Length: 135
Image (cartoon, rainbow, N blue to C red; front, side, top):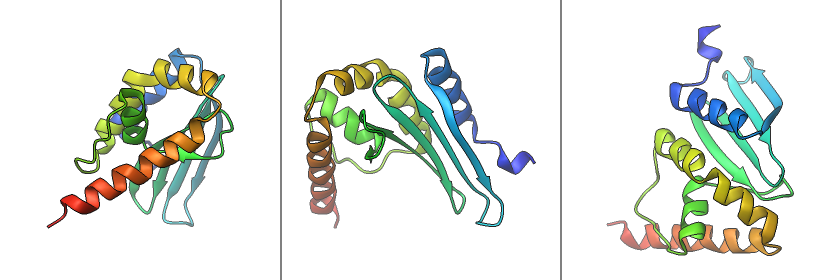
């Protein structure tokens, strides 16, 4: 079915992930559950998860354990060592962050033993910053 196909930014990200050596380890489509979809790509040090939940697509990136996943904007803040809470990126922006910073993400996950803790803290800090900026 055409409705099962991911949007173009996700399709382009899939190509980027495959070219970088990440392999598709899970591909689920759940027509009885609002047409939800789950794609998981595994690399040497990270996993990238693409989820369609009730019509909304999202991209997340894990650390080496492939259990805790974080928003691409959290990863960008971590990699740039600069907390940015300027709203929530679009799907296209999230896909671009992953595509552009994939090598940095893999290197950090491979080298940093405390990565999960640091990413969790970045996520919390970004959330707090967004809350302060709301009118």
